[in-house]
Image (cartoon, rainbow, N blue to C red; front, side, top):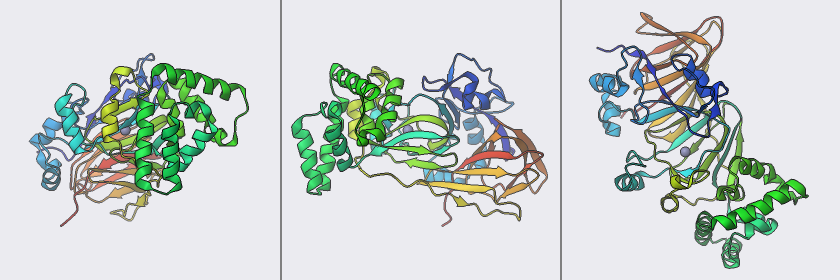
Length: 424
Ligand SMILES: [Zn+2]
């Protein structure tokens, strides 16, 4: 019978948008248990879970976590296995740390139907048939583009930014304008979809010509008050991806700067681009990303992007409101639950003050926790078992296990991703 709580090892991904060497939080966390950091590599992501593209292993034995869970299904629990149709010891969620100073591709994640379709057609590129709703929780200031701006806001940019308007026909702009004036939501969506389609399929030379003119004007001349709002963002993403048509998305998408501890969820089909920051990310177990900009030509898939994108224009979005986790003990209340409304996952932020203990009642599903700061002890089995953990270490916690996190002389910070099936 397996232990209920044990250390796992996780893999890093060195994508081009990652921060370099030990400047990356990913490298810092990974370096402590077992990774030799190469100061020339860009450490973008740390993956914790059972996705085959970077599966976690049981620390010590080196056995795949999925193999271990398949042999010990009680760690997942029958309700979770049945609810998500889990096979071969796989978890329903994938947990990550991201650290990046260059914008990730502008992307969407497919729903299940589109995911099955693209996986069947291009298994080399779309490695699984799963959907991928996700949430992101900021560990430092987090800049992100997410979701369509409403038509009236885009029209304001079209009338104040000639280099942006030059990307579209006057008919298309007039069509959007009349849909907005008549408050015709259906037509507005259609016009926005066409605007995106036109931009994403635009001739590269035309994009570069208009961007060069725009960036030149922003660097040298006074701009309108409307443009002032977006100027620094636009110049920043242009420096990251010069000449890329995605730079114009600064006029078409909502821009957020999240503070540490703030979180947002990304729905299936919602366009987004993470620009810079250090974040905790959690998603349904999938690597299905359909990119449309800020990526090499061969990685873009404009047709499937347009097929899967949900046009739901809105000014701003509601961040995930965390709730206090009712502790299973009389100790401190240092746990917040971020529940994005995605069946497969939620994330707890656990901050244990110096010399304090934070108790978690049993969860009806498996979880994975990473120590992001300090060190401490995890205690379970009514106090008979304990494991000392420090920054960078990752543990698996089997379903149904009550645990206590105990800090020593310094505070102890963890993030714990979990899935839970409601009681009938
Ligand atoms: Zn994403």
